[in-house]
Length: 394
Image (cartoon, rainbow, N blue to C red; front, side, top):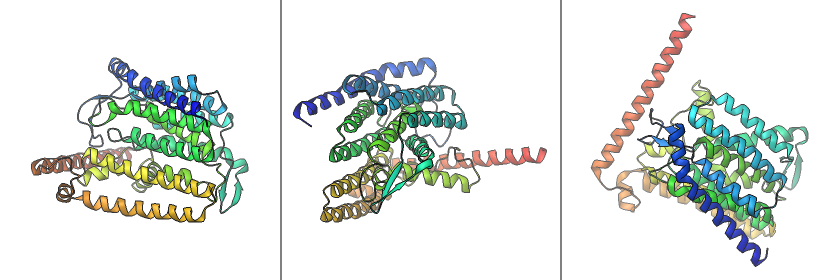
């Protein structure tokens, strides 16, 4: 990769960021005109006033323009352009009309099938140096990964700037892995995706002027899944699947826990609730920004572990593998220490991590959380009572 290529890559990233940044205000206006507004009607929503939510259009615009100008067309890009475009349209319709979860799942499966038709396949992984071929299971495994990661990015979109920021962080992690492995084509695509996210983020940070909505979350999840299939799962490492699992650890774990939680409570896996990591952090007393920053840090640390592991494997340095383990242990210890510091309002104030120091504000936030939890419990009880009454009438 020569100096000219680096300059072009930087220009491509800046282009993506500028397009996303400058198109967000018109997209916000469009959201008001077409009624794509998120109105906080239940305790699950963390914002307090109606907010437009098709901001993903700006992210898609930034990515599309930059890749069309600076990237050579490839099967990977065609899959992203076509499948991503379909998901953006689906997201816009969902942000306006709130489509059924099953309809969205069917469209996502079709889009995953489009990616497979372009040769995007997880046909093998490496385990302990042994290549495990999936054979006929390659297609369902790939489709499960694409649909699963698309929804995982969507499910963590519960706080201002969270999903967009996590997507940018994971993109940077993938970019660094691609540089180490020499896949400069995927590295450029990933860098452009990062630029698109960063261009939109100033409008999305707390307090958000616009949400990216399903429009952006589905597109980002889909694009990241395509890039990871091509560039991460097929790494010739001792445990190739650990790299993508580490990079996407936060959204994947949050999604799996959410599905298990809902099934245990007798609910549909698609049933929205207020039990995600970001909800729990806010319920513990973290402010909106504190919770987002903590989750950013966790995602970045897990990405660092993946990058260090990849570097160690490709240089065949046993000592570097130990360094990877040291970083992983340090990451866990840091997360625990920060969690202890920030768990209680009093310790947050002493540590200097608090967004607010007013005891009155702390008490007000506590009362608001309790009111939200009570309203949610009453809504769930009313729903169960209606279901029992309906069953009784039958």
